[in-house]
Structure formats: structure tokens, C-alpha cells
Length: 284
Image (cartoon, rainbow, N blue to C red; front, side, top):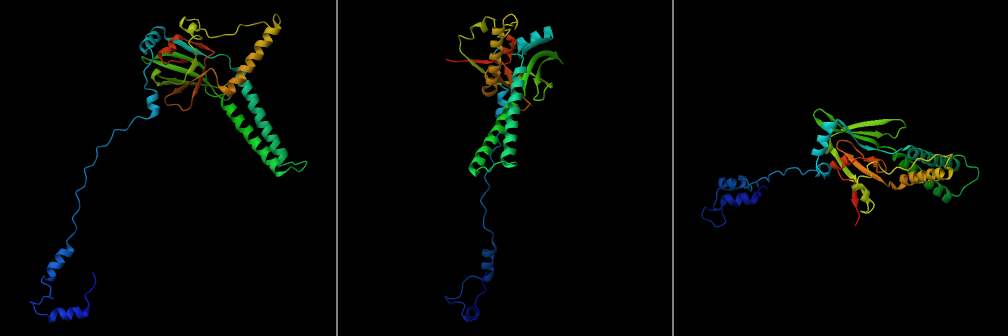
């Protein structure tokens, strides 16, 4: 508070009590109003805490199974071990991926060293930038192709352990000759991407003819050299095409494990797998 001026204090004491200029309230009254704290508004009642909503990762594994798990559990309890899936031979697929990735890395390393470290002839600046961008893209493509060799499912088995059904995945690693074994429950499996087919092409599936999988007939090279060579070239072309398009692959997610596991539909698929989830979706 500002102090009163000296002349005002003298005039205040000299004025009579009944004067209009003299204040009618005492100093104690002013101190009471000045020291009185302002009233606070009552606090609003707190809103009840909302229950946390389940995230997307939890909802993926809470879906309704097409045929239920009861039939699968009864059969596994009776037989002990059931083969649900067996992948085809992926040696050509993996060998093609390693060779293509090695070519990309070698191309990038050789051109980078030739252009930026050991220049035989002077190269314009704009050409160096173009070659550098090309080397970078080749490195990225080689890395992506090399990553396509990991999380390839080799076999899926269902067995009875600890009074419950357990699904065992045998997965190929990106490192050659190394396999990873993962045990999960059937409810911990979710289909991330299904195989899109037409109803006419899957008519054999309902008749039970596709349980053995579409296998190419074995041919002897010495008896049928032209046919054997044609089949080998077709398999090589299909493997290279799968590296870029990932066709015929079904993506699975396992609760508690990161990444997407890939299942090749060209292998053996048992009918019992439909109890876990539908692998195909039909086009209209």
C-alpha cells in the first residue's frame, strides 16, 4: 500500500469530527477489509477415471475363431501331435535373395570407391551426385531383399503339453542353417494378411484336394531334359518374383513376439489350421 502524503495526514488530524471531509470509518475497519482474503470458488468434483481402452495389439488376438478351438484341442489331446503346416523348399528363394543382395552391396561398394576415392578421370559434380544416389538406392534394395529371408515359417505343429494345446513354430533365421523355435497358445495367433483368391480357384480346397499342397511333379533331367529345364527356370522366376511382390505369402503375428512371420501357401496346409484362423479371403 502507498503511504499517505504528509500534508494529508496533518489535514486529517486538524479537521473536526463532524466534518464531511473526515472519514467516518476507523483505521481498524479499513484494516479488516484490507486483510480479508478473497473468497475462493468451490473446487469442481473430479471426474471418474475412465478404464483404459484396449490397444490394437490386444484386439488382434481377441478375435472370434472361425470354427472354435474345441475341435482342435480334442484332436490334439487324442493324437498328441498334429502337423498343421509344412513349407516348401525355400533353398532357391533364400539363395536368390543372398545372391541379389550381395550383388547390390558389391555394386554400391565398387562404384563408391571408384567415384569418390580412386578417381581415374575427373567426373562432373552432378554425375557424382547421381552415382551416389544410385549407390544408396542399391544398398537399400539389398537390405530389403536380405530381410525377406528372416521369419520364414518352416513347420507348424500342435502338441499336447501341460494339459493344454501348444502351437510350435519352427522359423528360419536370416542366418543360414539356423532355426528358431517358438511355442505359443492358439489364442496368441492372429492372421495379419490373408491370401486373396477367387471362389473358382478354391473349389478344390473344399473337396479336400489341396491338403497336400500344389506340388510340381518330379521329373528326371536325363529322361525329360526340356521339361526339367523349363520347371527349373519357372521356379527361379517365381522365387525372384516373390522377393519383390511377396505373393503367396500369408502373414501371421504372434502375441509377445515382434515382427511378421511369413507362411508360404504353396506348402502343405492341414484343414485343422482353420480352427485357428481363416487363411484365405475370396474376391467378389
